[in-house]
Amino acid sequence: MCVMTYLDYSASTPTSLTVLEHMHRIEREYFANINAKHAFALRSKEVVLSYISKMASLLNIPSESLVFTSGATESNNMILFGLAKSNPHKRHIISTSLEHHSVISPLGELQKLGYELDFIPYLHGKLDLEALKKLIREDTLCVSVIAVESETGLVHPLKAIKAICDDYGVPLHSDMTQAVGKIPVDFNNVTYASFSSHKIYGPKGIGACVLMKDDIRPLIYGGRSLSKLRSGTPPNALIVGFAQAVIEALEDLEVRISIVTQLRNQLTQKCDALKIVHVNTPHVGVPHICNLSFMHHDRHELVNQFSNHGFYVSASSACSGQENVSKAVLTVSENMDCATSSLRVSLSHLTSESDIDSFVQVIKKVIQ
Ligand SMILES: Cc1ncc(COP(=O)(O)O)c(C=O)c1O
Image (tube, rainbow, N blue to C red; front, side, top):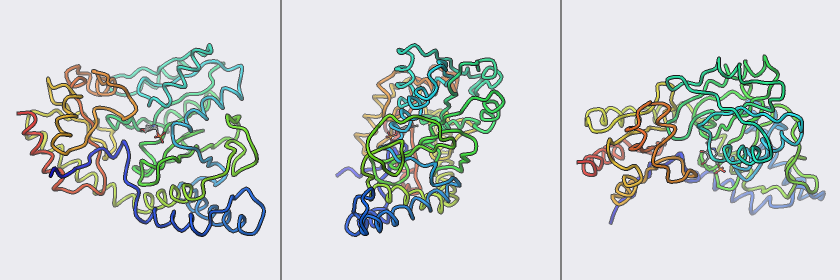
Protein backbone atom coordinates (compact mmCIF):
# COMPACT_ATOMS: atom_id res chain seq x y z
CA MET A 1 0.00 0.00 0.00
CA CYS A 2 1.17 3.53 -0.82
CA VAL A 3 1.96 5.63 2.30
CA MET A 4 0.54 9.11 2.11
CA THR A 5 2.79 12.12 2.65
CA TYR A 6 0.81 15.33 2.80
CA LEU A 7 2.79 18.40 1.75
CA ASP A 8 -0.12 20.72 0.96
CA TYR A 9 -0.69 22.41 4.33
CA SER A 10 -1.29 25.81 2.70
CA ALA A 11 -4.37 24.37 1.00
CA SER A 12 -5.76 22.97 4.24
CA THR A 13 -4.69 21.39 7.53
CA PRO A 14 -6.05 18.55 9.65
CA THR A 15 -8.07 19.75 12.64
CA SER A 16 -6.04 19.49 15.83
CA LEU A 17 -7.25 16.79 18.25
CA THR A 18 -7.44 19.24 21.15
CA VAL A 19 -9.48 21.62 18.97
CA LEU A 20 -11.87 18.72 18.28
CA GLU A 21 -12.13 18.01 22.02
CA HIS A 22 -13.07 21.63 22.75
CA MET A 23 -15.64 21.56 19.94
CA HIS A 24 -17.09 18.28 21.18
CA ARG A 25 -17.64 19.74 24.65
CA ILE A 26 -19.37 22.80 23.22
CA GLU A 27 -21.65 20.70 20.97
CA ARG A 28 -22.73 18.62 23.98
CA GLU A 29 -22.79 21.13 26.83
CA TYR A 30 -23.11 24.65 25.39
CA PHE A 31 -25.09 24.24 22.18
CA ALA A 32 -27.89 26.78 22.93
CA ASN A 33 -28.66 29.51 20.44
CA ILE A 34 -26.59 32.33 21.89
CA ASN A 35 -28.99 34.91 20.47
CA ALA A 36 -31.69 33.54 22.85
CA LYS A 37 -32.34 35.06 26.27
CA HIS A 38 -32.75 32.15 28.70
CA ALA A 39 -30.11 31.06 31.21
CA PHE A 40 -28.74 28.18 29.10
CA ALA A 41 -28.27 30.55 26.13
CA LEU A 42 -26.54 33.05 28.37
CA ARG A 43 -24.24 30.35 29.77
CA SER A 44 -23.43 29.15 26.25
CA LYS A 45 -22.79 32.73 25.14
CA GLU A 46 -20.51 33.36 28.09
CA VAL A 47 -18.39 30.31 27.22
CA VAL A 48 -18.18 31.24 23.51
CA LEU A 49 -17.28 34.84 24.37
CA SER A 50 -14.53 33.67 26.71
CA TYR A 51 -12.84 31.83 23.81
CA ILE A 52 -13.29 34.86 21.51
CA SER A 53 -11.80 37.09 24.16
CA LYS A 54 -8.68 34.89 24.54
CA MET A 55 -8.32 34.65 20.75
CA ALA A 56 -8.59 38.45 20.40
CA SER A 57 -6.16 39.08 23.21
CA LEU A 58 -3.52 36.81 21.60
CA LEU A 59 -4.12 38.56 18.26
CA ASN A 60 -3.74 41.87 20.13
CA ILE A 61 -7.07 43.27 18.88
CA PRO A 62 -10.34 44.16 20.61
CA SER A 63 -12.89 41.29 20.61
CA GLU A 64 -15.42 43.62 18.93
CA SER A 65 -13.19 43.96 15.85
CA LEU A 66 -13.68 40.24 15.05
CA VAL A 67 -16.59 39.26 12.78
CA PHE A 68 -17.02 35.52 12.19
CA THR A 69 -17.81 34.35 8.66
CA SER A 70 -17.79 31.05 6.78
CA GLY A 71 -14.14 31.50 5.76
CA ALA A 72 -11.66 33.91 4.22
CA THR A 73 -13.54 33.90 0.91
CA GLU A 74 -16.63 35.33 2.58
CA SER A 75 -14.52 37.73 4.66
CA ASN A 76 -12.81 39.16 1.56
CA ASN A 77 -16.18 39.56 -0.19
CA MET A 78 -17.74 41.11 2.91
CA ILE A 79 -14.98 43.68 3.26
CA LEU A 80 -14.73 44.69 -0.42
CA PHE A 81 -18.47 44.83 -1.17
CA GLY A 82 -19.28 46.18 2.32
CA LEU A 83 -16.81 49.04 1.85
CA ALA A 84 -18.20 49.76 -1.63
CA LYS A 85 -21.71 49.98 -0.12
CA SER A 86 -20.65 52.41 2.57
CA ASN A 87 -18.72 54.69 0.17
CA PRO A 88 -20.81 54.82 -3.03
CA HIS A 89 -18.87 57.78 -4.47
CA LYS A 90 -15.45 56.12 -4.26
CA ARG A 91 -15.15 54.05 -7.43
CA HIS A 92 -11.43 53.24 -7.67
CA ILE A 93 -9.57 50.31 -6.08
CA ILE A 94 -5.85 49.52 -5.99
CA SER A 95 -4.63 45.96 -5.58
CA THR A 96 -1.91 43.56 -6.77
CA SER A 97 -1.79 41.02 -9.57
CA LEU A 98 -1.04 38.23 -7.04
CA GLU A 99 -4.23 38.23 -5.00
CA HIS A 100 -6.13 35.06 -4.17
CA HIS A 101 -9.27 34.38 -6.23
CA SER A 102 -11.43 35.38 -3.28
CA VAL A 103 -10.16 38.94 -3.84
CA ILE A 104 -9.65 38.85 -7.63
CA SER A 105 -13.22 37.68 -8.28
CA PRO A 106 -15.04 40.29 -6.15
CA LEU A 107 -12.77 42.95 -7.68
CA GLY A 108 -13.79 41.66 -11.12
CA GLU A 109 -17.46 41.92 -10.13
CA LEU A 110 -16.94 45.48 -8.90
CA GLN A 111 -15.23 46.29 -12.19
CA LYS A 112 -18.34 45.08 -14.04
CA LEU A 113 -20.30 47.54 -11.90
CA GLY A 114 -18.09 50.37 -13.18
CA TYR A 115 -15.28 50.44 -10.62
CA GLU A 116 -11.80 51.24 -11.95
CA LEU A 117 -8.98 48.94 -10.86
CA ASP A 118 -5.25 49.64 -10.76
CA PHE A 119 -2.53 47.15 -9.85
CA ILE A 120 0.67 48.11 -8.07
CA PRO A 121 3.55 47.04 -10.34
CA TYR A 122 6.39 44.77 -9.15
CA LEU A 123 10.04 45.72 -9.59
CA HIS A 124 12.37 42.69 -9.47
CA GLY A 125 9.90 40.70 -7.41
CA LYS A 126 9.02 43.51 -4.99
CA LEU A 127 5.98 45.80 -4.93
CA ASP A 128 6.88 49.26 -6.23
CA LEU A 129 5.66 51.46 -3.40
CA GLU A 130 6.59 54.68 -5.20
CA ALA A 131 4.19 53.61 -7.95
CA LEU A 132 1.50 52.98 -5.30
CA LYS A 133 1.75 56.63 -4.17
CA LYS A 134 1.09 57.78 -7.73
CA LEU A 135 -1.91 55.45 -8.14
CA ILE A 136 -3.87 56.73 -5.12
CA ARG A 137 -6.68 59.13 -6.13
CA GLU A 138 -9.37 61.25 -4.44
CA ASP A 139 -11.93 58.54 -5.23
CA THR A 140 -9.82 55.52 -4.16
CA LEU A 141 -12.06 53.24 -2.08
CA CYS A 142 -9.24 51.10 -0.69
CA VAL A 143 -5.91 49.44 -1.31
CA SER A 144 -6.07 45.64 -1.08
CA VAL A 145 -2.79 43.73 -0.72
CA ILE A 146 -2.43 40.07 0.24
CA ALA A 147 -0.11 39.67 3.27
CA VAL A 148 1.59 36.44 2.11
CA GLU A 149 1.23 35.33 -1.50
CA SER A 150 -0.04 31.76 -1.32
CA GLU A 151 2.02 30.08 -4.03
CA THR A 152 5.53 31.40 -3.43
CA GLY A 153 5.23 32.60 0.17
CA LEU A 154 6.28 36.15 -0.80
CA VAL A 155 5.65 38.49 2.15
CA HIS A 156 4.34 41.95 1.25
CA PRO A 157 5.52 44.97 3.32
CA LEU A 158 2.19 45.84 4.97
CA LYS A 159 3.70 48.28 7.46
CA ALA A 160 5.18 50.45 4.71
CA ILE A 161 2.00 50.16 2.61
CA LYS A 162 -0.18 51.15 5.58
CA ALA A 163 2.02 54.21 6.21
CA ILE A 164 1.44 55.33 2.60
CA CYS A 165 -2.31 54.62 2.86
CA ASP A 166 -2.49 56.66 6.09
CA ASP A 167 -0.71 59.60 4.43
CA TYR A 168 -3.40 59.64 1.73
CA GLY A 169 -6.33 58.76 4.04
CA VAL A 170 -7.14 55.50 2.22
CA PRO A 171 -7.99 52.25 4.08
CA LEU A 172 -5.86 49.12 3.60
CA HIS A 173 -7.45 45.68 3.30
CA SER A 174 -5.27 42.59 3.52
CA ASP A 175 -6.05 38.93 2.94
CA MET A 176 -3.97 37.51 5.81
CA THR A 177 -5.01 33.89 5.33
CA GLN A 178 -1.48 32.56 4.78
CA ALA A 179 -0.02 34.73 7.54
CA VAL A 180 -2.12 34.48 10.71
CA GLY A 181 -0.92 31.60 12.89
CA LYS A 182 2.09 31.03 10.60
CA ILE A 183 4.20 34.15 11.13
CA PRO A 184 3.89 37.10 13.56
CA VAL A 185 1.26 39.58 12.34
CA ASP A 186 0.33 43.06 13.49
CA PHE A 187 -3.22 44.18 12.78
CA ASN A 188 -2.17 47.79 13.32
CA ASN A 189 -0.67 47.48 9.83
CA VAL A 190 -4.11 47.10 8.21
CA THR A 191 -7.56 48.67 8.37
CA TYR A 192 -9.39 45.43 7.52
CA ALA A 193 -8.13 41.85 7.32
CA SER A 194 -9.41 38.36 6.67
CA PHE A 195 -8.22 34.91 7.65
CA SER A 196 -9.46 31.37 7.94
CA SER A 197 -9.61 28.55 10.48
CA HIS A 198 -8.85 25.53 8.29
CA LYS A 199 -5.39 26.84 7.37
CA ILE A 200 -4.32 26.71 11.01
CA TYR A 201 -5.57 23.32 12.24
CA GLY A 202 -9.10 24.51 12.97
CA PRO A 203 -12.38 23.30 11.45
CA LYS A 204 -13.48 24.19 7.91
CA GLY A 205 -16.48 26.48 7.39
CA ILE A 206 -15.36 29.34 9.60
CA GLY A 207 -13.13 32.38 9.19
CA ALA A 208 -13.04 35.96 10.34
CA CYS A 209 -12.81 39.58 9.32
CA VAL A 210 -10.77 41.86 11.52
CA LEU A 211 -12.22 45.36 11.27
CA MET A 212 -9.92 47.92 12.85
CA LYS A 213 -12.50 50.53 11.69
CA ASP A 214 -16.22 49.92 12.13
CA ASP A 215 -17.44 51.57 8.92
CA ILE A 216 -18.52 48.90 6.46
CA ARG A 217 -22.13 48.02 5.60
CA PRO A 218 -23.45 44.45 6.01
CA LEU A 219 -24.09 42.11 3.09
CA ILE A 220 -26.21 39.70 5.13
CA TYR A 221 -29.26 41.05 6.92
CA GLY A 222 -31.31 39.37 9.63
CA GLY A 223 -31.80 39.40 13.38
CA ARG A 224 -29.30 40.64 15.92
CA SER A 225 -26.35 38.34 16.45
CA LEU A 226 -22.74 38.48 17.65
CA SER A 227 -22.12 41.22 15.06
CA LYS A 228 -24.47 43.53 13.19
CA LEU A 229 -22.47 42.71 10.07
CA ARG A 230 -23.23 38.99 10.04
CA SER A 231 -26.73 37.97 11.14
CA GLY A 232 -27.70 34.36 11.75
CA THR A 233 -27.30 31.92 14.63
CA PRO A 234 -23.60 31.79 15.53
CA PRO A 235 -22.06 28.31 15.19
CA ASN A 236 -20.83 27.88 18.79
CA ALA A 237 -18.58 24.87 18.22
CA LEU A 238 -17.03 26.26 15.02
CA ILE A 239 -16.24 29.57 16.71
CA VAL A 240 -14.72 27.79 19.71
CA GLY A 241 -12.77 25.42 17.44
CA PHE A 242 -11.42 28.35 15.43
CA ALA A 243 -10.55 30.32 18.57
CA GLN A 244 -8.81 27.30 20.09
CA ALA A 245 -6.84 26.76 16.85
CA VAL A 246 -5.69 30.40 16.95
CA ILE A 247 -4.76 30.05 20.63
CA GLU A 248 -2.70 26.89 19.94
CA ALA A 249 -1.06 28.39 16.84
CA LEU A 250 -0.07 31.62 18.60
CA GLU A 251 1.03 30.05 21.87
CA ASP A 252 3.19 27.63 19.89
CA LEU A 253 4.18 30.04 17.10
CA GLU A 254 7.93 30.25 17.75
CA VAL A 255 8.28 26.47 18.05
CA ARG A 256 6.26 25.85 14.89
CA ILE A 257 8.25 28.45 12.94
CA SER A 258 11.51 26.93 14.09
CA ILE A 259 10.49 23.36 13.11
CA VAL A 260 9.15 24.43 9.72
CA THR A 261 12.19 26.62 8.98
CA GLN A 262 14.49 23.66 9.63
CA LEU A 263 12.41 21.43 7.36
CA ARG A 264 12.34 24.07 4.64
CA ASN A 265 16.13 24.45 4.83
CA GLN A 266 16.55 20.67 4.68
CA LEU A 267 14.35 20.55 1.57
CA THR A 268 15.99 23.46 -0.24
CA GLN A 269 19.52 22.24 0.53
CA LYS A 270 18.72 18.77 -0.81
CA CYS A 271 17.06 20.26 -3.87
CA ASP A 272 20.04 22.54 -4.51
CA ALA A 273 22.31 19.47 -4.32
CA LEU A 274 20.17 17.65 -6.89
CA LYS A 275 20.87 20.42 -9.46
CA ILE A 276 17.68 19.49 -11.31
CA VAL A 277 15.38 21.55 -9.14
CA HIS A 278 15.27 25.32 -8.96
CA VAL A 279 14.18 26.88 -5.64
CA ASN A 280 11.92 29.90 -6.31
CA THR A 281 11.15 30.81 -2.72
CA PRO A 282 11.90 34.53 -2.32
CA HIS A 283 14.24 35.95 0.38
CA VAL A 284 11.26 37.68 1.99
CA GLY A 285 9.28 34.47 2.16
CA VAL A 286 7.43 32.57 4.88
CA PRO A 287 9.04 29.33 6.10
CA HIS A 288 6.01 27.10 5.49
CA ILE A 289 5.83 27.58 1.71
CA CYS A 290 8.56 26.30 -0.56
CA ASN A 291 8.19 26.80 -4.29
CA LEU A 292 10.27 24.55 -6.56
CA SER A 293 10.67 24.40 -10.34
CA PHE A 294 11.44 21.23 -12.28
CA MET A 295 12.66 22.71 -15.54
CA HIS A 296 10.85 21.57 -18.70
CA HIS A 297 8.33 19.47 -16.77
CA ASP A 298 4.64 20.36 -16.87
CA ARG A 299 3.58 21.39 -13.36
CA HIS A 300 0.13 19.79 -13.48
CA GLU A 301 1.62 16.54 -14.76
CA LEU A 302 4.13 16.67 -11.88
CA VAL A 303 1.32 16.99 -9.32
CA ASN A 304 -0.19 13.77 -10.74
CA GLN A 305 3.12 11.95 -10.76
CA PHE A 306 3.91 12.85 -7.15
CA SER A 307 0.36 11.94 -6.21
CA ASN A 308 0.81 8.50 -7.80
CA HIS A 309 3.76 8.02 -5.44
CA GLY A 310 1.65 9.13 -2.44
CA PHE A 311 3.07 12.68 -2.13
CA TYR A 312 0.48 15.43 -2.16
CA VAL A 313 1.66 18.85 -3.36
CA SER A 314 0.04 21.64 -5.42
CA ALA A 315 0.84 23.39 -8.67
CA SER A 316 -0.67 26.57 -7.27
CA SER A 317 -3.23 27.60 -4.68
CA ALA A 318 -6.16 25.16 -4.53
CA CYS A 319 -8.71 27.72 -5.74
CA SER A 320 -6.87 28.79 -8.88
CA GLY A 321 -7.47 27.13 -12.21
CA GLN A 322 -5.18 24.98 -14.34
CA GLU A 323 -3.01 27.89 -15.52
CA ASN A 324 0.11 26.73 -17.36
CA VAL A 325 2.16 29.71 -16.26
CA SER A 326 2.35 30.70 -12.60
CA LYS A 327 1.98 34.48 -12.44
CA ALA A 328 3.36 34.47 -8.89
CA VAL A 329 6.48 32.47 -9.78
CA LEU A 330 7.05 34.59 -12.88
CA THR A 331 6.88 37.71 -10.68
CA VAL A 332 9.37 36.49 -8.06
CA SER A 333 11.76 34.61 -10.40
CA GLU A 334 11.36 36.68 -13.61
CA ASN A 335 11.99 33.38 -15.40
CA MET A 336 9.36 31.84 -17.71
CA ASP A 337 10.84 28.31 -17.49
CA CYS A 338 10.50 28.46 -13.70
CA ALA A 339 6.93 29.72 -14.02
CA THR A 340 5.77 26.82 -16.22
CA SER A 341 7.34 24.05 -14.14
CA SER A 342 6.71 25.13 -10.55
CA LEU A 343 5.20 23.30 -7.60
CA ARG A 344 4.20 24.52 -4.16
CA VAL A 345 5.34 22.33 -1.29
CA SER A 346 3.76 23.54 1.93
CA LEU A 347 5.06 22.35 5.26
CA SER A 348 3.82 21.95 8.81
CA HIS A 349 5.20 21.34 12.29
CA LEU A 350 3.60 17.90 11.74
CA THR A 351 5.94 17.19 8.80
CA SER A 352 8.96 15.03 9.69
CA GLU A 353 12.55 15.05 8.46
CA SER A 354 11.97 11.60 7.01
CA ASP A 355 8.98 12.97 5.01
CA ILE A 356 11.39 15.43 3.41
CA ASP A 357 14.00 12.72 2.75
CA SER A 358 11.41 10.46 1.12
CA PHE A 359 10.08 13.35 -0.96
CA VAL A 360 13.58 14.08 -2.26
CA GLN A 361 13.98 10.39 -3.19
CA VAL A 362 10.71 10.57 -5.13
CA ILE A 363 11.82 13.79 -6.85
CA LYS A 364 14.83 11.83 -8.17
CA LYS A 365 12.58 9.03 -9.42
CA VAL A 366 10.03 11.34 -11.05
CA ILE A 367 12.53 13.64 -12.71
CA GLN A 368 15.30 11.30 -13.82
C1 LIG B 1 -4.63 33.55 0.54
C2 LIG B 1 -5.96 32.89 0.65
N1 LIG B 1 -7.06 33.67 0.73
C3 LIG B 1 -8.29 33.13 0.85
C4 LIG B 1 -8.47 31.77 0.86
C5 LIG B 1 -9.87 31.21 0.99
O1 LIG B 1 -10.08 30.75 2.30
P1 LIG B 1 -11.37 29.93 2.68
O2 LIG B 1 -11.14 28.53 2.18
O3 LIG B 1 -11.45 30.01 4.16
O4 LIG B 1 -12.55 30.58 2.04
C6 LIG B 1 -7.36 30.91 0.78
C7 LIG B 1 -7.52 29.46 0.77
O5 LIG B 1 -7.35 28.80 -0.21
C8 LIG B 1 -6.07 31.50 0.67
O6 LIG B 1 -4.97 30.75 0.58
